[in-house]
Image (cartoon, rainbow, N blue to C red; front, side, top):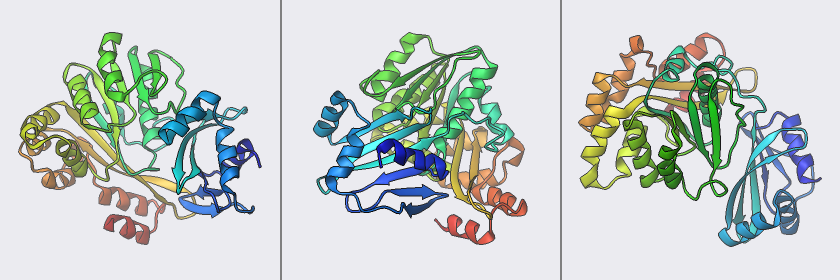
Length: 340
């Protein structure tokens, strides 16, 4: 099979990912579970050949030099994938994530009304968090496209790689890709200020410099959206603070308390009748939450979420209870994920 045929099988089987590993047949992730394609095991050379079919000569050389590469790839039929190439025990390995062709409406992915309010903000920081494969990119794209459809803004995205292809509507959208359009997220963010932005989307806050620059941009009158690999609102606050050296943390707590507007923390869990559904924890920054952040009491944020329903807040447990009542998720599934 060619790489395009393998990627078409991702689409045909409604899979989220394709994995190519030397010594194994091609593997799909369907509804969260790994499934081997009925095929012979791939050799080192076969995986390398399939992977290199995605790359031009320059990208091949870059990958061989840096040993890691993230790229976007489109099939002739238009389906897009985010592809990671890496080495494993000296052999090339590949993981490809399918990106939906259409950017879903916020209602289609059941984002609560409070998430729409985040898209109406004039400035501040909104974070979408969750583990790998939890649909963060889809949620973020849906929120950005809501702004695109309803407001006349200059939107700049910084991504690695570019995933969803936005079409400018009421807004102008510039999509910048790491490696081809900018050297680092931090540098891209610094120069974004010269591009007259209203809204900035940061694909991932990866390091101290990127986090610091993101907070500063949110503080200086821009609406900034970003993602983090964290499991809850409280863990997100701790992760941001802990990146900085101890002597800077009191100032960062003050800065985060001032700039943070909300956190959408989500996971994808198995549905009753197959497929997956998003379960979310929502934090809306208010005086009580801001005070907990400033005082370094992130462990008490969960209590504030439990009593913050009138602000649109919801805990993971409360959202699981909703999904159970709507007969979308089994109680056993909720118990399994809440233990994690």
